[in-house]
Each structure stands twice: as C-alpha cells, then as structure tokens.
Image 1 (tube, chains in turn yellow, red):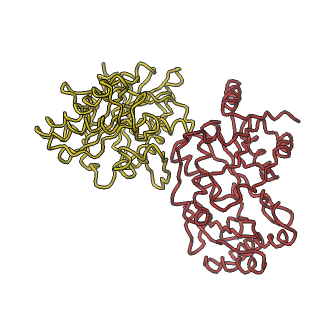
Image 2 (tube, each protein chain N blue to C red):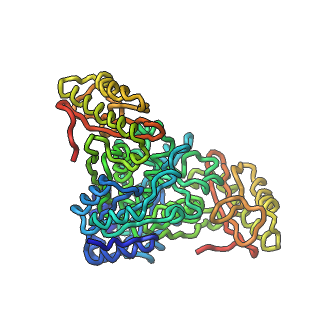
Image 3 (tube, helix red, strand yellow):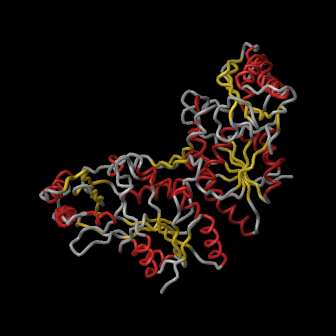
Length: 291
Length: 291
C-alpha cells in the first residue's frame, strides 16, 4: 500500500477534495499535530470506515500552546509520520506552513466558553481558543463530511462538538477510543519525552483512574471519595505531580458531587517536565467505553 | 409579484435551501434586523443579480447590543417588512426566535480583533463579537454562495469579510452602497426615532463628511485638518454630539495621518438619544463610490 498525497497549500487541498467530490466520494478529516502513534492511526481507520477518502492534517499549532509550554520542543517527525500514514490507508496528508493557516492580517478567534472553564481549560490559558480556531480554519479549508478526534483529549472533543453544533458547520464529529501501551499508559506524542523511571511511574495515572472506576463498581457514588481513591495511587508515585483530578459531567464538564449516570474522571499531571493527561468514563458499574 | 416564503426554523431553512440546490440554484443571503427600508431592499436587488434565490433573515440579535443600548426599543415591524419583501423579489424570509439561534447550551463566540479596535468597536463593547457570531451561525444555517451587506455599516462589513476569509467560509461577501434620503441623511432603521428638529439637524452628518471630501478634492491631505472640516459642520448642529469622527485605512481601519490613496471617513453621533453612523470613502479627488 502506498501513495499518500502530500498537500502543502490550502489551494491544493481544495483541488484534491474537489476532485474527490466530483467522483462522489465522502471525505473525512483527521486533524493532528504529527508525531503520530497508534492512537492517531486508529483514528484514520475509523475515518476510513466512515468515508471514501481520508485526509490527515499535521500542523503543530502555535496558538494552542500556552505561554511556557512545549511548542518549540514538540516532536516533529514528518518522514516518520508519512511512512506511518502510507500504511494507514489515509489518502492525503495536509502539512501547511504556519502562514497558510494564519496569513498576514489573520484576526479571528473562535471561543467556546463554559465547558472550557474546568479541567485543562483552567491551566492552559488560550489553549482551547487555539484549538477551536485552528479547527474552524481546517474544517473551512477541507469542508469534510466527518472529522475524527481521540477521546484522550476529552475536553478538546467536547469543545469541537460544541463549536460544530453552535455554528452549524454541517459535519459529523466522530470520536475514537484512547489507545494504551501494554501497561495501560495512554498513548501520547509526549510520552517520548519521558525518561525510564518517569515512564514507569506514569502508569500510575491509568491505574489510579481504574481504581476509582472499581470503587464506583463497588457502589461508591461520592465524587470526593472516588477522586481520593485515584489520587492515592497517583500520588504514591513520587515523580508525578497532579495538576487536576476531577469527576465532571460528560457534557457540561462541570464537577459532579455524586456519580449518577456517567461521569468523566480526568487527570492531568506533570511527570518531570512532561505534562500528561488521561481520562476514563465511569458509571455505576465501573469504567464504561464510549462509542 | 408575491410569494415570499416565511421560514421560522433552521430546519425549514435547510429544507428550502436544499430544494433550491437540487434545482441547481445559487443562493444569496441578506442578513438584517428588520425595520426594513429602501437600503435593505437595494441589498435584495443586488442579491438577486448575483444569485437565483435570495433569502433575507430578520433577527434583532440581542448579542450585538451593548449594555444600555436600544435592544428593547429597536423597531420590530414584521408585517410591514414582509409586505416590502413581497415587492423586493426575495424568495424567502427567515425569522428565527432567539432560542433557535442561541439554543440552550450555546457557548461559541467568533471574535475578530484588530479592525474592531477603532470606530464603533471602541464604544460598543461586545457589539462586533455579537455581529460576527450571529453571522457565523446564519451562514452555517443557510450555507449561501453570496452574502450581501450595506456599506453604511462599514466596520461590520470589514469584520464579516475578515471572518469569512480567515475561517474559509467559502462564500462571497458583496456590499451595497449607502442609500440616502433626499437631503442626504443615510437611511437607517433608527431614523424613525428622530423628532422633527433632530431629523433636520441629523443631515449635518453627511454634509460634514462631504465638506471634508470637498476639502480633499481641493488638495488637503492632512487627516487632522480633513476631520476638523467635517467636525465644524457637524458641531454647528447643537443637537448632535459626536462620538467619533475618524479617517481610517479602508482595510485595517487604523487611523490615517495623511490621505494617500483612499480613506474611510466615518462618524458616529448621538442626536438626542439616537445614535447614528455614517461614512464616505474619500480619495485625492474627493468622495469615491466603492463597488
């Protein structure tokens, strides 16, 4: 298998997508920041099941890095990404330069409020404005039928869903499950930052979340106690510093006091200099997988 | 001539526009707040020349009224508007309730920065966010090929152009000239607020702008002096209180020091409680009409 077309300009994207449209093909977009891992590739597979043509974008979006974050260090590995995409079944990859997304005079911000007040939104000023704006630009350029996002970035997914609905963007937002390493660590482009001992201790994130899920399955409904249970495990790993650990409503992302139907248990922690996030959806009988 | 279809829901808009699309028709949208006058009707005529089907929206958008402004008093005259549209050649009018534009949970704001720092943007906090957001929603619902706006709201036009370009909305923004009463007063839904003497003195706005244009034609290039010439006329009308009177670059809307190619001379003034705006484009040989 081979033949992923590399597109470098909005004009070439429009030409390519138009030619697909003329053939009657539906189009799915998988937006990424590159440094692709199996999680990304699984999103491409989902996209392929939904649409005849799949375009992956790779753009390390400066607007979604808050001040002091790892924009400069963020891994860029295009040749490796391209090789992975060749095998993924994607049809095209869009790799714009910054000035193609944000040309001279660019002045527009799309902001989703409310659901960005909790979780990462509290700690990454401007991050979600960067995400929603770049996605609005990419969706406008590609005009896909379907866009695919991973559920590891749960708040990002909620933001995109809200924006797409509010602005009648006329596309379907599809999500894919969090892929994990054998020891449970959520796959992330940032995992490659981790040194050996950090990598070992990072597994405490998912173990903590799953202990809380288990606690829920045993009948615990009190959010504070559910959170404390996860925290216990995570904090027993000395290299982890928790930024937040919250149980929130899956739609409003507002903190829950008690677990009723479903709750999103989400964590962000620093492992050395590296910031990792993870989450599980939990219900009265423990962890539940979304569709 | 008759038969403007009245649409009250986004779903009926989508159905109507889809049926037009199936017939191969292009679609133009003319967004308004109702209280239609000849200026609006001229925009419908422009829309008809560009597209096979024209939809006019009427929505008094609460989000674009700053605190203390005339949202509650803003004239609403649907039966009159509808009668005017019957004769205008519009094919449909979309009259949504507020909760159809901003349903429960609506959380998205589209903000255009920079060009909103001057002119009205300085005095109407949140106004242009309200304008760009409601237009993004309406454009998403209707998905027109062309949208038509009047040049009386020059900054609004610039904001919409910027948003459409930045977010690749894939539609063409067309503008129409400011229509004026016989004595030069720019047509506005707010003119009906004016009492007789206010109405008489309001003509000083356009007379002032045109005196400045004449001054430019005589060779004056200094922005301060060009502005002062207009101000002289306007301030000689005691019922007028100028909020701003600026000569700005037509694209960036940044204040000009000297008139070179073209400048937008724009004014806002209170006439009693009523706030009016007007503008003329001026060049080295005086007032110039845009296309």
